[in-house]
Length: 285
Image 1 (cartoon, rainbow, N blue to C red):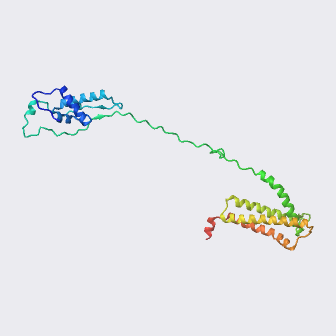
Image 2 (cartoon, one colour; image 1 turned 90 degrees about the horizontal axis):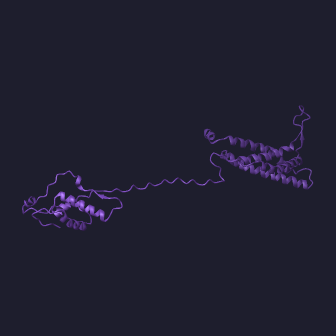
Image 3 (cartoon, rainbow, N blue to C red; image 1 turned 60 degrees about the vertical axis):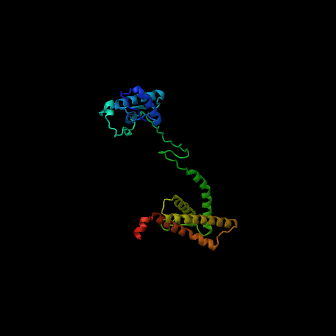
């Protein structure tokens, strides 16, 4: 779109319709250079047109974001004044159209600051009432009910082993002849003390999980074996007592006589395995 040349300068008011049409065609406010090229005007009139166009846009459609057009009035470059004579001095061979130079619009956007995201505090899980709080020691399970339950069993087992010992030849002996002839002891008590005490201790070592693997494995099998021997001894005593026997058969007597020796061997072996550690075995190898 070009304008015809005239012998007098065209005022800004007459150039406004053409500038509005250019805005409509471009869909935006043109730059100063575009106005100078399309309307054949100088820089001062182009700045005035830009100011009018910006003011009209602001009045017609106010910007909710707060954007405003910054005109090029601050430019310090030296621009030629508009004169009709200067335009008429151009030769006929020269092109009268000025190549438009795309100049980006200078728009300062005053955008509101983005809202800061509120840091959500970490959600602390609800404390489990079954678990003790940090810094609070959990109370150990009481042991006295177990002792109360074991007391009747201990009395029955003690009497059964003492009775079986008497049927198999265990009885009153004087361990210190010539030193303390009056000191006597019933060797039948060695059976419940040896077998049942070792079974309880080996069971504790097995379930503790605080010993080397070999010791734990040995404690497991020896504890189960001791409990099985104790059960067989009780069965044998009550059967012979119910049958009215005054002495046990020789097979039972031989088995019962070997119990103190077996308990001694198992106790000594378990003690050595508990003290034996992996580091000690590596040094030996």
